[in-house]
Image 1 (tube, rainbow over the protein chains, first blue to last red):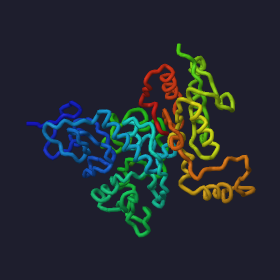
Image 2: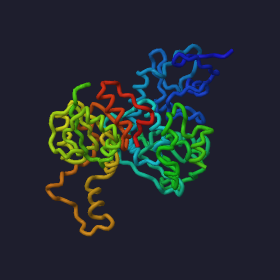
Image 3: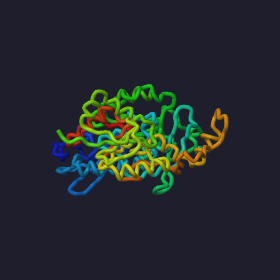
Image 4: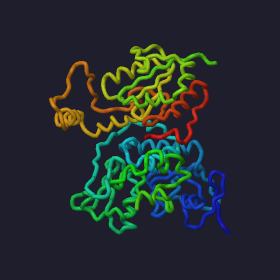
Length: 244
Length: 179
């Protein structure tokens, strides 16, 4: 006998052990997310997948599905909360879309479009962060890192390398690289690694192919992320083209 | 037919790309001029502001003249629009916030490649630069926001026509982009 909960009025079946996000993804219902990738253990850090269950706001990627739940993911209140979270992510880093090779293929940008963010609204931090171009095939622009830890999880759990970690606390949290110099070029990282392919922003970018797909013909240029899915979703032809 | 409204536009620290995109509304400009009177704008080269209903402000705030112009626009205009990426979030010029103003000027005017007569410009006619480039909402209250580098002509027309008609502004998915 299948169990179900209700997501914005729609019955969603689930198996024991699934999260609300798992069940929604399996049913083809989009809940915005950045730090979640079904290939890795849930992280619950970006809070973009916030949903309301009985007046309590939880992250859909970490909340267990259970029989009879009434989940609100589409109300204006939830969308406004997501917009505010996105706005904070934008002002906390340096996200200059017109100067970013990832623009149009960027999950951060696409989710911001989806929730109707027109402006970052808050006061910009304009943090001073560096760029690491030491690796021959991949560049890291720390200005664009949102600390989702997808590269950390991919390198540790899939590649078995532990190239990345988050260091520091609070506002000082930042991505660090395991190598004698702290540079990516001196690490065990390779462009074939899963960790090279999971970044939801332009923080980890392949070199030498920036504008192979012109602006205007990119993944999220014509249709929203709720329809075309994540950049690295399995079976996504765009992602297959981008990363060999 | 609604009464004509008075519109100003200005480019602060921008590249005039948003104004070029405004001109890209092409023949719709004929509808527009039936319904608006232009006040100070680079399109007419009128240099002083009157009292306006609407102002489109392109560009971020990078120098003291930008601050003065923006404050005057806010005083003079009922509805102020952050028009394009630089006004919305500082845009490309705000990338100089990554370095100190001194470093930026030295790299451009002292150490840059191919300089004939190195020297940081200090003519009193040149407005003094701020230490950082700011989006306009960090200086004045903003009523509407139109992102894009530049916003497309269709997005601009969606905005202007809805505003003039008093309709809710409802952008198509492809009309809102940050690049």
